[in-house]
Length: 276
Ligand SMILES: Nc1nc(=O)c2c([nH]1)NC[C@@H]1CN(c3ccc(C(=O)N[C@@H](CCC(=O)O)C(=O)O)cc3)CN21
Ligand SMILES: O=c1ccn([C@H]2C[C@H](O)[C@@H](COP(=O)(O)O)O2)c(=O)[nH]1
Image 1 (tube, rainbow, N blue to C red):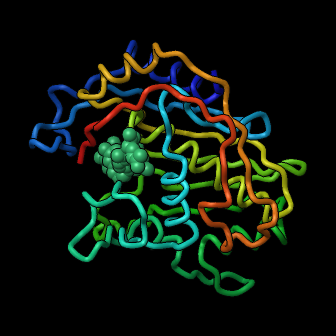
Image 2: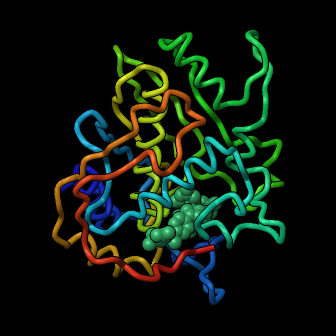
């Protein structure tokens, strides 16, 4: 069993057994047929993944590793908010007729801000600090810009990352205000683990821990039977994560610079409904 499977199974059991239902409350998300998408949830879930031990990826079902990396590069490297720059269709339901998801995610990371050392966007500021001031306790990004919320089609869910160098290890806290556990948990964990590997490599650091703080960790009503089946499945050991060590510039990474060796996983769960 991978460490990611263990954290996922324990969190899902806890939500299923002790979570609070939203039935009877007004909820924003809807299913494709217009029915309100209710959830059961736990508040304030914290999961820790030690990246120096293994790569955190679910084996209960296949995580589309390439598509997950493509999305994290779309946000953090291309700093794009247009689905035309993304190779999957996962954001199509939130895009307008021009493909824009509004002033969210990549758009926010690409805005330049003025600092004492000059003008940087949020990603370049992180890269600068990790190189020049790695022990700073001020290395963080924030996408939750209230000034622009009215121009976002979906408010950022994974909205802030705090980077912290301890010894020679790069740790990070991913703050997430809301998470769709079945669709996004395995996906987001794998993405931010890759992001820490990228930042560590180009900054001459080793990888440390990813701490994932989820304010509202929820399982949608139509996902409950799927999750119940999933967490009873056979699991496999974590695969080996391979990164192209020749890359020294964050902006040179492509999806092809990452590989998983020996990734074994359970049957795919086809056509999971996604609440919009
Ligand atoms: N309700 C909801 N859940 C989410 O996870 C979510 C949103 N909305 N809105 C914005 C983005 C879009 N995200 C998504 C949307 C769909 C998939 C999805 O269809 N995943 C499939 C596999 C996709 C593939 O292999 O390319 C899956 O089986 O999980 C994943 C992330 C994550 N976010
Ligand atoms: O990276 C992501 C993006 C979105 N989600 C999920 C979390 C919620 O289920 C919905 C957003 O609805 P809100 O009402 O705005 O919370 O999308 C995710 O888990 N991960």
